[in-house]
Length: 205
Image (spheres, rainbow, N blue to C red):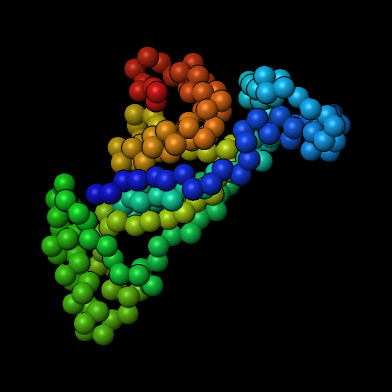
């Protein structure tokens, strides 16, 4: 089963959150380009905002992912309200086969469910009707736009050992790619995770 999360877009540099916050004090570079701040000053402010829990500031940075995973992983990850989604539609697209099936469910999907789907189509059923033969392990794809506050919420809930393995694997890749694009914010989240969870919890490096 293909499990993949590609980071498509980041809306602004992570240190720009400092100038988002400075709007409230009338000292933002956005408002007055003559006001300039050293990168270390911006980093210090972003750190302080995170530690103090001024989460509304982190809603101004958005990230977009393209994700490939089973439908049951999609169903878990589209429960987050402060995000925008668009998914591959089985009203418009043919169902995808699973390459290299690794479980009985995936084998059943390839060998039985897809066959039943095609027989229904050949008998005159519409795609939206025939998709009822497909189990939740069917592969799918969706694109999602998170603000970083909500992304932290996803990380908090889906990177713990209690999360489903496939979902955790997808979200771990989301975190890995986020760590490259926004290393400061990723480190702040990881440090908080490490503080908040006991030693037995898997710590995303």
